[in-house]
Length: 279
Image (cartoon, rainbow, N blue to C red; front, side, top):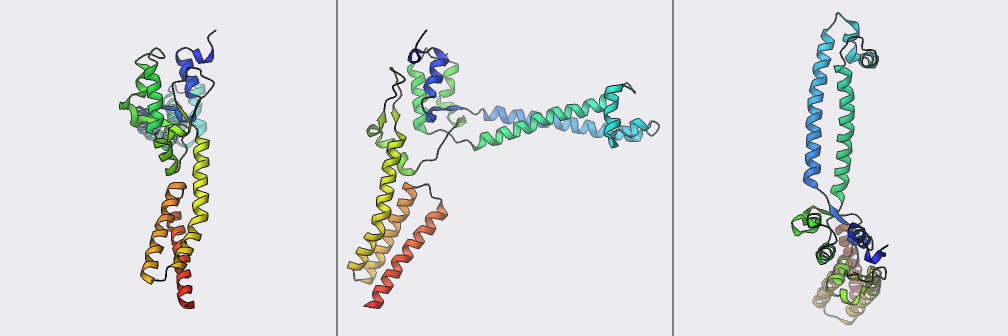
């Protein structure tokens, strides 16, 4: 029996993709999903019109109470299906057909709504999968491997996409050689793995350092500088640094960045105002 690292075909591909969540990339088939919804929608529209016509026909048949009652009573609408009293099952057949198609339509809508929320993979993740498949041409057939081609890049989704800070993305892109790790589960592993844990630790260390240094440093500089115009420039510079730190080292939203920066600038202004008053 072949070992795991020597797996065959889809078995090896699946084992490789399972090594890292960043590699779990698949086709969305957005066009086909939407086309399926459109077909179901059109089918429902026809069934809806048919049921409305059957309602009118049954309601106009005042000579037979059972027919007239179909649009008004579940009992009479469904009993023709089980008893065959009038030999015409069109009404209840249509209701059951609508029930079946409507369930599939609603399920398709829910699935597409969920798929729309999935993120597209990063270029790094896509390149890793694409290059691995390209380097192992006997892994799966050429036709099957087409899902990793560049033409389908906009149709790919990432199952476990986690939002990363801008600094983490920059480090992973430009300094990944310092954070590479090897996975011992594959002896012939051709995909280079980056340690997200180490990158997170570095980013966290930077965030803690800047959050400790920036407030104190700005106060020290403002205390040392006496010229009002220069102080104003210093406040602007440190406020910009605060915004950049929040934008690159955290996942803060725009409103949170604005609020925190405004509060930080206000503290500096209060310090300068108090210092001027004391002078």
